Amino acid sequence: MADHTFDAIVIGSGISGGWAAKELCELGLKTLVLERGRNVEHNKDYPTANMNPWDFKYRGRMSEAFYKENPLITKSAGYGEDCAHFFVKDKDHPYIQEKPFDWIRGYQVGGRSHTWGRATQRWSEFEFTAPERFGYGIGWPIGYHDVAPWYSHVEKFIGICGHKDNLPAMPDGEFLPPFEMNCVLKDLKEKLKVNYTDRHLVHARWAHLTEPAQIHLDQGRGKCEARNLCMRGCPFGGYFSSVSSTLPWAAKTGNLTIRPFSVVHSIVYDEQLGKASGVRVIDTNTKEITDYFARIIFLNASALNSNLVLLNSKSKRFPNGLGNDNGLLGKYVAFHNYRGSLSATIDGYLDQYYFGRNPTDLILVNYRNLQQQDTDYFGGFTTFLNAYRAQHPQDSAEGQVGAAYKEALSEPGGWHIYMYLQGETVPKASNHVRLSETEKDQWGIPLLVTSVEYDDNDERMV
Ligand SMILES: Cc1cc2nc3c(=O)[nH]c(=O)nc-3n(C[C@H](O)[C@H](O)[C@H](O)COP(=O)(O)OP(=O)(O)OC[C@H]3O[C@@H](n4cnc5c(N)ncnc54)[C@H](O)[C@@H]3O)c2cc1C
Image (cartoon, rainbow, N blue to C red):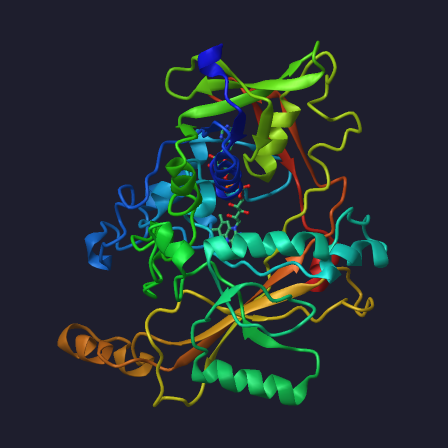
């Protein structure tokens, strides 16, 4: 038992687990991080990071057979041949969709911190208070001002680029300089100012090191080189991921043990102590079961998998899952309404260009349902947007082959713009996940049933 006892156990090594490990290890606690997937080390395990498009067998796509076998995971934004190794495969990790719901997962050390989009704007006071003020939810026990110092704590360490805009609907943080706004976006910003008083186009906030500070260099990270190949893993550590930042930082303390290939089955409840005392783990390769013990157990297996672990942690005291006396576990799933998008071509500006492949977008800050309820739907939304020049002049390149086509490619094309909605959904008890009573995964753990769907409110927002 002594070998299996730590001061703290962290379940999951993604964005939140990496953070928990960093904080606990820095405080001197011997910390065990349990991760169901394989190990991933910064740089060493980025096999595609420096590959060119022509180096990929399918030029960045997957084979048709792969799409047929993996209709779900291949829907993820940015999914492709260059980063497929950071996502699960559908048949390895099934779940039961009572209603259609895309559950996008990456099971490895670092979790989804490898492939996340890196947008990091803060919540504002409005998000904390609107559900209660407008009667579509309950009040939060904490407000923006409780969280703000912690946002700062995180932002300084991971490095966030952005611009201080002094807008209550999108509070400022601790920013490194933003990427430059290109000419089309600058004009759009000015036109919005002339036509609306409440619509602000600003730099979104992104976990990219535009100008690394000492704390980032100390992590062994460097400047973002604007390659926009982030989802492959960045050799420069130019964006934040657990494996480029928090986990190596935790390891440097000498207090960290990471155990990959360790799927947590449940949290062990000690009936006599009346406390959670350990974690039951199944080795994903050998299927051997081992218990680990600690006084602190930090569950960071992502939102839905954390619910799964708690629901599966059954004891005499907690027959419906650990801490689930009120039956709320798995209910009120909130997610994002991503279904609105627009794209267009923009005339003119043909004498202007921009530097590099800027990996960031702008944001049209939420302007709905802030001070009062001003629409026929609840909740607000932000709009991400960007403008860019096409790779070649479409008119002249279309239909061409050979030398003429190559010639055309040497010139940039016209300007394009895209926008997409990121909308708030209303948490409802009926949007829930639960354990399957009949079906289990390859390790004997019940499958998750997802019963989550969009509703009329989401339709009205779109
Ligand atoms: C394509 C994409 C783009 C995104 N873009 C953004 C963005 O721009 N901004 C933003 O804020 N968020 C974004 N997200 C969401 C963001 O990635 C997640 O919110 C974040 O990673 C959650 O952190 P986490 O630690 O809770 O979970 P994860 O990062 O998913 O980590 C969970 C870890 O737990 C492990 N695990 C799960 N179950 C078990 C178990 N039973 N036992 C042991 N280990 C387990 C997993 O393998 C994983 O490593 C994006 C996500 C995706 C997929």
